[in-house]
Image (cartoon, one colour):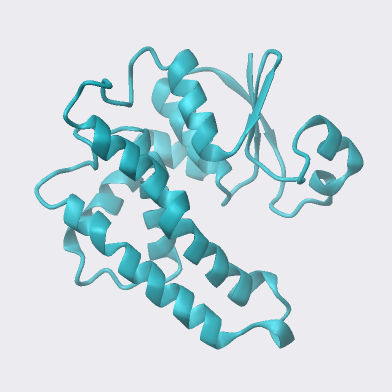
Length: 203
């Protein structure tokens, strides 16, 4: 039985989105973002040592980190779906965009959120926030270029779209101007229209 430890508006939405796309049954253990229960010794010992989500439990397996969880789900439960074959021409692009989110986009999102939300007002830096937002906008440029003439990043819809697509959705949500990135804006609209995404985003 799959069990997902989850909080809304966190990277755990990616995992719920993937599970919904796969049509796999799972149990949801939901917490409020920042819930003190996640920082308890019991949670740290039994679920995540840093008091975070997502965490996926699959029988005796417990795995954290959203990208690793997606790869695990596809390898163990995906039945060949949502990733191109290793010998496919789309496979290198799939790998690149699967990892681009955490390597390039989310560090800037994290910096922006720290400076505008998580830190108390007296410790926030408008300079750092603006720089993170500017860098994020620049790093979305290659995503927009990759989408020129195609609906998804690696051929058909894949886990790469969940990873980099979810970061792009977040970027637009914090006010990144996409007026000069029409392919990316249309891509985000396309992702947000998927029923599996809508389910996960509203858990």
